[in-house]
Amino acid sequence: MSEDQANQQKEAWFTLSGDVNSDMVHRVFEATSHMTEDGIDTAHVLVQSNGGYVSDGLCLYNFMANSPINFITYNGGAVASIAVILFLAGRQRYASETARFMIHKSHATASPGSRPDALNIIVEGLRADDARTESILRKHVELSAEQWGIHQYGDLHLT
Image (cartoon, rainbow, N blue to C red; front, side, top):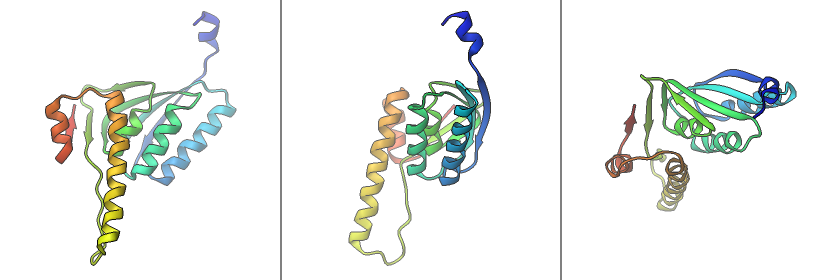
């Protein structure tokens, strides 16, 4: 990159905290629209979240990872569950010395008295979510066989 190009780049700083849900998706879409209007090239995003809905996290991952805006993500405290996938959307990623990550398999609660066919639909959806999130994890994160084993059946905490 030439010195002129470096001087012309515009950067912005944001925090993205709270539950990963449709409100967060809307906030990111709105902010990206404003960044585009303002000619922002790079967005520095501090992520602080205990997770939320898998579908919303996957939407944000796909949107941010493929955006023309260069998203750089930071973990200054705790990023857990589907928020880890969101964090991995950053083309560059940073974590403070005391930052924590936690990943686990998807889970859901069935309504009392659910029929077997309804339970099968829930299980199929959970397996599909797990396959998608694991694919993203394997693309970006190197874990030991022992760590993958922990992730298979419980919460895996990483520092």
